Image (cartoon, rainbow, N blue to C red; front, side, top):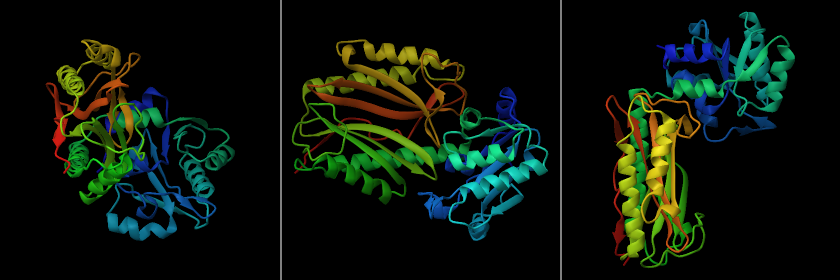
Length: 380
């Protein structure tokens, strides 16, 4: 069974005149195969004199003619994963740098299938330069275009299984942040707190990506040696992933009572986010959502400190849908949007709430909406 929306793929390729997509990034190889990526290189592609590279080629006019190229040593990993829907599985010679070997094998197979002189969409931001040079040299009659926008369009609407993993990732990050607040002490540094988030994320079965920390006053969000202290608003904005699906969550807390102004700003963030989320739904233009969010954060007594941002999230952060004034995207059921409402006041600090929602048939639903209130802890 093809693991992605066939119609959506064909439409995205047709819109751009693409004959075949050749994917090489970890996220798109996994997406197009239905979840497979060589586990040995899942966290780091560096190897020998170069890097690991695999490729999935999907012809737009005959998706069943897709083929996969990997290392000859990954047959065991493929067998453990289970049968791929792609029946044509090839391997490149086992050499220290796979990039040119995989590219040469891809060129050979594309020629054999009558696609060598067509429009080939490659992932320009993720394809090594030496591999691209081989493709251009071996396929002089081909026209190369960037596959990134087409694949982003295909991934934009999430299947139920993808939404389950996104919800898990968001919940686990929110739980890890909440636990970090609860266990925090005044002498904890921002570096200590970021490390605690990392441990919390991994203990909960997710893969840690980052933890941005800020304690006011000031707006620095790096993991420094500055101590949390009492009564100081702490912002933790953390990311993690489950099976490659990413979460991006921001929460606020303090040891003891925070300044009244900080709490007022946070409540303004909560109200603005509720209003913005109330406008998310199918058929809403992203450019309109951008205006709604910007207006919400500019309103009220703290407007000059307000900042709004929203973006798609899935296997990639800041993917489609793009919520910008220039966007021509219209929201569809299954699209996921991360909503960020911030106040950046140098005297108070960075006050922020961030959560993700999935567009539903009538509006939207939160993904991992837990621990969203201000965490006030004893810190004893």
